[in-house]
Image (cartoon, rainbow, N blue to C red):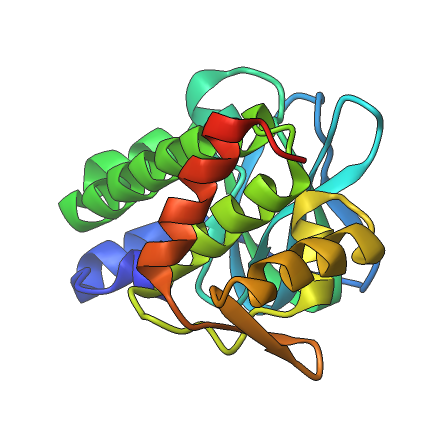
Amino acid sequence: IPLFAGVGDDDLESIAALLIERRIAKGHTIVEEGLSGDYMYILAEGQVKVTKLSGDGREKILELLGPGDFFGEMAVVTGCPRTATAEVLEEADLLKVPASKLQDMVAGSGEVAIRLIRHLAERIDNANRFIDLLLEDDTTARVILELQGTLDRTEGAAAPDITDKGLALALGISKADTRAALRRLSRVGVLEVSSGFVLIKDRKRLAEFLAFIRNSGAS
């Protein structure tokens, strides 16, 4: 588990004593947006979907978590209600860290403390990206921002794992609207769509087209 990488054997034994193991069935909601948080969770096996409701009640997928990822730490650290909902997509093995024990775990291991701080910083950065996305009313601009965000995260000139269906889910818009935006970008040479997969051809032009949309107010 990456969170515990580099931790010495003695510290690992101490950390293990703080964890509660649970196996959770597919479809189960682990944490729910708006409720209080008593645990942080570490995903040992399985897959978890993290979502948030938009203002009109639509579900937006924030991220898909796999083995080694952890979540739920924000509510535990801040004492504020959960900011998102986490649901099991594939039967999951979870390690629960009680709020009362998290401080002990961090205080006992500098490696864990550093990784947790980095993770919180990434969450804040992702939240800022999400705010930028919501500020865009134009569907094509929102698609471009999502594509740019994916390219930034993968640090590549192409993103063969991007699909029109995945974009629609991530943005909370219809597949028809997503495909219309992708066709518009395809016509100007920014990208290609083949069998539902999106290939970015010109990243610089992608950014320039976004600037054009913002300045012209096109829809």
